[in-house]
Length: 114
Image (cartoon, rainbow, N blue to C red):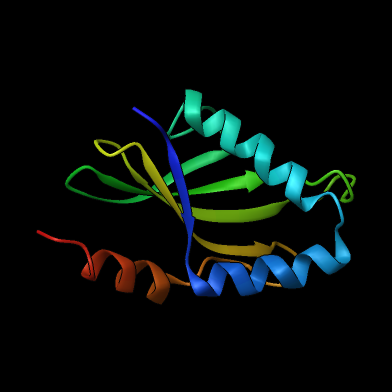
């Protein structure tokens, strides 16, 4: 089964904005995708499952950016385990925002089939 990665329009906008500041972001995201193919829900303290509904888990992870020395970005994604599909929902810098946007997570979960 092939693994697919999708992005919400909000994520695409945030990614484009951060890419202007942090040029390594494309490679950093590719590295995360490689990790997710092996361990969909991540492993260790850098991954945290925020919500679950059926076979879908919403996960917050640290996205290590080569341009940021000791700081990291946060990425929120939905893992559809049965379909081997990931949807990136949100990207933010911990210094700009202290927590994820819970309304984006609620809206995404509300749109899932029951």
